[in-house]
View 1 (tube, helix red, strand yellow):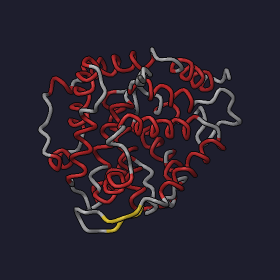
View 2 (view 1 turned 45 degrees about the horizontal axis):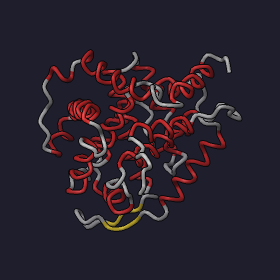
View 3 (view 1 turned 90 degrees about the vertical axis):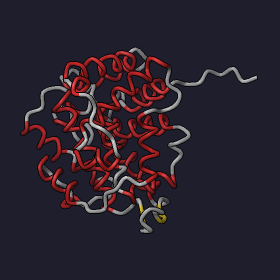
View 4 (view 1 turned 60 degrees about the vertical axis):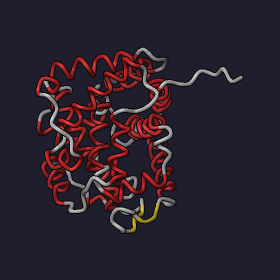
Length: 290
C-alpha cells in the first residue's frame, strides 16, 4: 500500500521557489539587485498577477492551443504553475549562466510545440515570435496592473522602467528586442492592437481550472476563489466580456480587502520550508550585504 503523502500545491511552489534562488550566485544575473525587476518580482501580489496574466494570455487562440495540446496542465495545474514560477524566479534572481540555461530549456521545449488550432483552423508554433510576444505582454502588463493597484508603491516612471527592463526577459526566449514594447502605454496599445483575440472552448476550460483548481483544502479553496474573482475584476472590460464573467462586487475589489487576502496566502506560503531563507537571500543581495 502506498502511504506516501501527496505534496500540497503550496509545497510544490515553495520547493520550486527555494531551488530557484541561489545561495552562491556567480554574478548578479540578467537584471541585478538594483533593478526595478528585482523589487517588483518579489511583491506578494504575484499569485494574483499570475492568475490575471493566464486569463489574458489564454485569449490568444493559437497560444492557448499550444498549451491545450502539448501540456499536462489539466492533470497537474499547480505543478505547471510551480515550473513557471521557478523559471521566473531563476531568470530574475539567478546568475547569468542559470538564467540563460533556463531560457535555453524553454526554447528547446518550444521546438516541439506546433499544430493546428481547432477553433480557428490556423497553424501555430510556440517558436513564433508573435505568440511569444503576446505571452510576454500579458504577463508584464498584468504584473504592472496588479502591483500598481494592490502592491508596493509603483510610480509611473518606475512602471515604465520595469517594462523596459523586462525586454530582456522576452529577448532570451526568442522575441526580437526591437519588437518588445518599452513603456506601459506601448504595452497596452500592443495588446489592444492584436486582432486575433477570443475565448475559445480551450481557454474557458483552462481558466475554469485556474479559478477553481483541484487539491486545495477548504480554507485555501475559499481564499483562492476570492482572489480569482479579484483577478477577473482587474481584467480589461473586453477581456472579461469575452469570458462572459460578471464584474465582481466592488467591496471584494477594495485594496485593503485584497491586501488581507494576499497576506493570508503569503503567510501560508512563507511558513513552508525554504521560503523565508530564499527571501532573505534576495533581500541581503539587494541591500548589498551578500
